[in-house]
Length: 136
Image 1 (tube, rainbow, N blue to C red):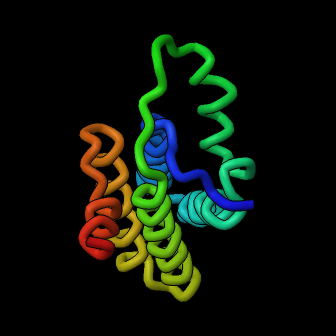
Image 2 (cartoon, rainbow, N blue to C red):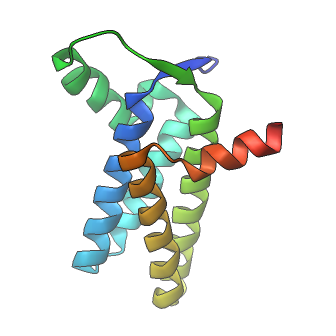
Image 3 (cartoon, rainbow, N blue to C red):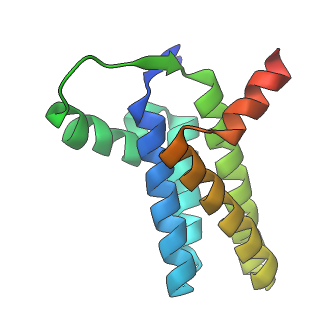
């Protein structure tokens, strides 16, 4: 199954908001397994497609039906690349936690939190910008 060429602009924003919420909660609670769970959710979505995406399905089934107006679309490749970066960095944070480097792990996780929050609230997606510059 190939991934769609475009995506509803609200899907990546919702995903980014959920990543920020979960990683932020993990930091506040100092419960690093939530970072690993978030990495797993992102990996499942990235490699299994939108049908397996917990955040994507939540948006499509619960939020989108309550929204009025037309759906605005954007190219899907940049947010998919950004999601891959989030998966890799949260996975790296998980490995750092497992091997006893919590300060480094939290630094990586908080960086992902900050970038996800930035993208969710302002539509400034650093991973998307990196993708666009790499492809151009």
